[in-house]
Image (cartoon, rainbow, N blue to C red; front, side):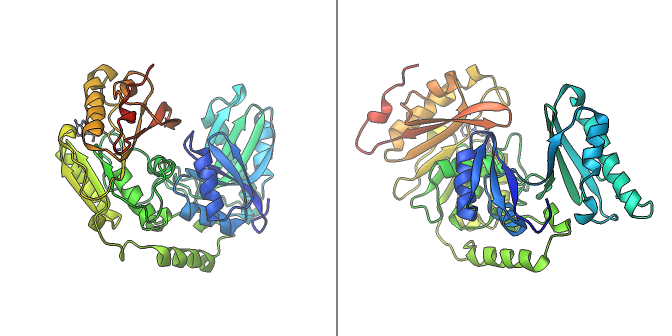
Length: 397
Ligand SMILES: C[S@@+](CC[C@H](N)C(=O)[O-])C[C@H]1O[C@@H](n2cnc3c(N)ncnc32)[C@H](O)[C@@H]1O
């Protein structure tokens, strides 16, 4: 695949957000796409691929395909990697790294595949650049090569973002267990939170404020990549600085953070340190003037003034913070709180399956399977109908 052509770019995302990612890619300008597990294949040229990196809130990575084929052993892997015209993509003085993901007995050790690929790339440059080769920088490479081996099927790509796209650049401090930014954004998309959304958004257990910041960026039509200082595509030969500058200029024009007024993002958390983290993150994202974050125990949480809005939260759940059984009362009081004070609101909760979600004691109007990393979760929707107690029916099973 040459840099000036259209390619079938692979855009990855957290498992369960494929549909949301597909709709988002279409809105960004992709005309042809197909869904895959934990991602979407999009037909794109280099400019559209850069636009995806800048505008996708849900994507983790944007991979530009270089070659696909079949390899059965070390020598075939080496030859397949060496056959790619790397010198058309980057210069010998630039640094690179290889990130490998292998599901093949022979290469289950991804490090081995990485070493073979690094040698092949270095040897190709040596043969063409008077014995010179690019250096490897594992932590902060200028060029990131993605190697996927599934069975004997090899896919080699360039990771256009480099560092995962959930790293927007606004996070000052995450605390113990922040949600990834793109998972939070995907949940907000599923919750129907759109630019100019009416009503307030409340996270009563906001932690470091991931939902608040991502909701603010959506509300202000701020490109998630606008705050990020670097993408690996900037170091590739097909990169055209004026084309990128034009994309940035368009994003700056759309960005309403400075013109928007009125507090619409509300965060509460029991832990004062978390409140501080949320505020720091909102400030770093340029959204503090749209938010109000206070220390508050869940049972004391009141809806903000104004019309009913959207409640979205990621309460503690087992494994990462506390065993499930210790958390049952928290989930029960959450359900009681919704019933008592949040009539007319839509509440969205991401948690694990099983006893925790049941102890909320309310009927769900949606249960969407989602993965938080490797952990299988459910995004639950509780619709707190106005003037009706329908949502208060305890769910069976
Ligand atoms: C899983 S963390 C939320 C992480 C957050 N979504 C983020 O991205 O940073 C759960 C949060 O719930 C808060 N929390 C736990 N019990 C609470 C309670 N009873 N009242 C208010 N907040 C509580 C914790 O302090 C913690 O910050």
